[in-house]
Length: 151
Image (tube, rainbow, N blue to C red; front, side, top):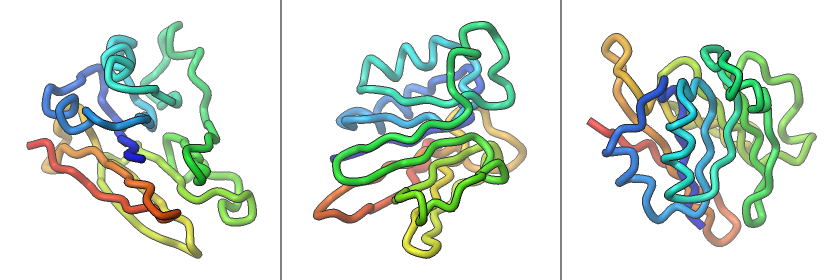
């Protein structure tokens, strides 16, 4: 199973992101969507699970949850916008991966057997940070994450 992970699109779904996400069975958006059209575009590719970020204040965005826990295959994913807002202990809660955004800084880290993945920003470039998204392959019961540069 291939899972696409994107965050901080800020209203912009790049054509390069669409190409990288093609073939994914699920797309996780970790907030700061910016425009409902971004989610509509992602839904043309695969099932989308999205959370609300700090810029998502319009009426359409208020329907998005602040956090979401989902099962995909044999793994459990917890999605939120800001890692600093994580209020549970992922391992104790049975979470295999924590997906977050906000900082626009891509990162992959394993801590006590839990994957922490920030896909970076898939939208406008901020400062000198790269424009990226993530993918996670779930294969043979393992999570195989990667950061994919878009520019």
